[in-house]
Image (tube, rainbow over all chains, first blue to last red; front, side):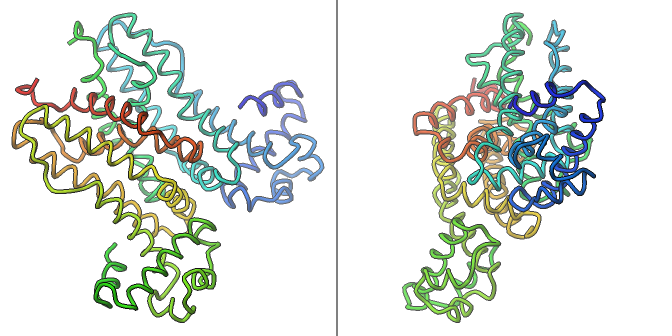
Length: 221
Length: 221
């Protein structure tokens, strides 16, 4: 996961001409990959759309796979920065519920965008031929969300707000109570099935209610 | 959804030569589609593998899409027959729990096969270009599972075994508590991530515990 970030961070100070070129290449590459799929994307087209020579593209990214890795990293990183944050300041069941409702709303709002849903489609389509791409999307997506949330849950259990056998199992259950139905609908029924903010709110409320019924500490009931 | 079934049922009595040919065509088509994807599959190859002429393939199925529809219907129908059945004979919380554990085990065992997972990958890959294929997989898969389970839940609520606001929401939550994590892992990490029977058992037990914490009727606790 960290390879493309390392490239970005090591080569240039922010705002240099080289960094701006690299950002333009990643943005153009994202558009081309999402349009044409991984196998169909050409480095010529990416160079053309980013306004640099193909040689310059290869100076920044040694291969199409390295470039796609940078696209995944950039798209997932931007999403994760919106969703994940420090341990929540939560001291009672009211605050816990508010925190989980807010988390669920942010997660669905950020994940259920046409760009990320198309990235998911395209990575699933190529998972057999290019397993490393899908593994990266997993690490940056559900894999990361589950680990971050498991850590949050451990601190909430320490505060006697939650009771759990296995924080990772609880994190996975919350994640799929939130994401399962809407993501599957969008995968199968297309971007028209992306829920509205009002639908997200209702869906998240039902998911959090089920989660808390299972995991809220008895002292908080 | 019903078009290919209608073709199968209307044209031939069971076991006729024509029906055996049709079954051979569908089986060969399934193998070709899963191997090469929808766009890459050729009717010539399907005819070759099923041992009939291309003309015969077209006599049974007017287009590649009709043939793919028959493949989806056949694969999903076989899976659904294993998972769904009549309203369960369930009169108390012990029997309810046993029924749900058995349902979860059957659902995951049937759904998490290399064939159905590959069908899912391929339909997601083609969902933009051929939206009707994905809609069919949705109707026959999660869509159908949710409707059947919502009906079961209504009868369980009538018996005061469950309490629910919305049977479809409860059905979707159970479905994704069961399916979300393992299906996502297999989509992203490949068929090596298909869980073992022991892993399925543990995963299902945790899912059912959370579901019952939220929905078991208070009289049953």
